[in-house]
Length: 178
Image (cartoon, rainbow, N blue to C red; front, side, top):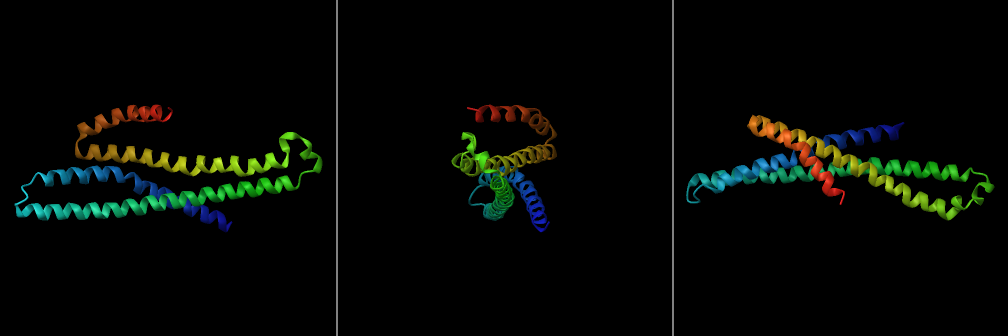
């Protein structure tokens, strides 16, 4: 029961970190746009140094935020997935140990084949759970956050972003399939 509490806590931390990770690219775009406008100011103007330093400090804090949120997200989801794989391997190995000796006579149940299942097939489960869920959650939240920021700053651009988002998602799936 204590292990389940740790896994639930790690999953909650992972979801919170994914929410933070969803803000990374929209905030980077916002800060980059502000910095580009600062670079249009004449470098001899005293306001240039003040504005440049202000937005560079924001970039520095954003880099720290990106590091912390991404590290926490990968750590939390990795912890959950490793515990899932460990539990499945232990349960499968325990079930194999209690089988009758005649059960191993089938070629599909030879000890080498079963060892391969424990090693490779369950390791595939690790990649299908934590990495897939973390990336999918971050992408979905990123689209929501980006659309919300677009609607906040310009409702016309926000509507265009919302209308074009399904096309971008379809294009991403199409490109990843090849």
